[in-house]
Image 1: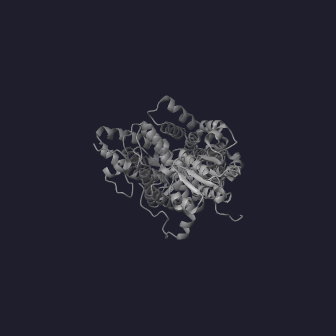
Image 2: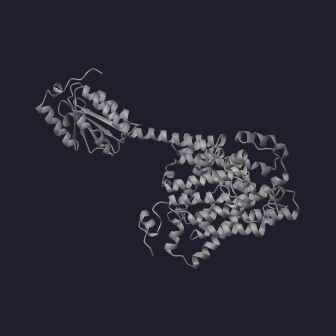
Image 3: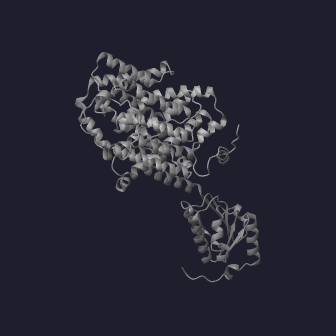
Length: 590
């Protein structure tokens, strides 16, 4: 068996090129050995996940505003490509609920072709992110930001399902969320008891089935039972077959067409124009960012469940390639799906082959069971999305954060939630990250403290310092958020002080702003006719000090390795040259 002691070494052992991190999970599986028992486990797990993915993929495509078969094509094509090329052994890729709020407006403005083109562009961005080794940067997105926009997405999804759950007749659903709520409220008089009953029965079975058995997926039990009952009893409920139709060879087919995903141009028959790309670029960026966040979070959770480790850069490349290929077969935007990935692991998956089996199961259902699928009630799919939205919201976790987190984090969470619901996720994430960064800078600045010791202050100062010497120590990072405050206390140095020891040994890092503040403070001390001894060790990066050449450019500055050496230099200066301050060159008035 090949030994892979580190990340860089593992890529060399597995024969990966130095540039593009590709198919890491599949190569690791091959390097670790794969036998018939593992294939049997993957076959079972993939079948279970495929059954779960079938209704979910259709429901998510419908929620976006696309025909249901496009969700199935996404699960087939994107699920296969990501499994072959990604960096997580257990990730299952497909359409997810998080994309609903991003993809819905694209469909309403640009149609299905715009949706497919935006997904293709997002795939290119994801590949670029993975190639540039940006996978680890997603980990720096603050938790209140992800919690806030995830809860907001869940709210939007749940609200949109009320149309089919209640059987409301809305001629045209507006684009903005407040207008959607107003439209649903205006159509409240058209509610149908039949649709409500179908949705209620599906919800009851979705919640009850896991308590009875976990060997059979709850969506299969709930939707299969309700579909059969509605068909057998002749319940006049709206179904996939009554809502969607496809023309094949001049014949109209109800529901999903019994055809595999076929090659096509995402942007349609005409040429792809620069104007369209320009209009879709913000949406493509949003898809790429959300896809990166969700897929890597899902992969991290999968690592926690299995004890394995994924390659985040390879996972971004795999997700990017999946989103590049899928639109050419009618697939919408896809990412790693946490619920399906967790189901895959619990079912005993051993390798990426389980995700490929899941895609083949969905394909088989299209080819063999398309007519049966057409009888699935729309209210049942809406009820399934209600459960997904509830699980996605994590209300208990949100409540816990609101109770125990600092007020600044609560403010970020609530802001991201409101912006996601009222406007969109892109604005919410952007504003949330900026707010979190500013609040973090404020908290870090509070960690940077300064201490001034000089004769007459206290017993410690009289014991450590001779007359005419002051000690000014900074503790904490000296960066742009803390530099001015850290240096401001230097103005309190007494007039009879001749030498100032500036202790930087407890400053771990310094940036350009910190250096400018330090130089300004040194200049003020020069004007006050005082010598300065900078006591190290100097903060990182030290090249800032080397480029600044403080000792060479400022004739009143000396350097010492530590505070003890600085004290000895200061004593020598004051003792041997009691009038040294007067010997400094005159300084012009500021």
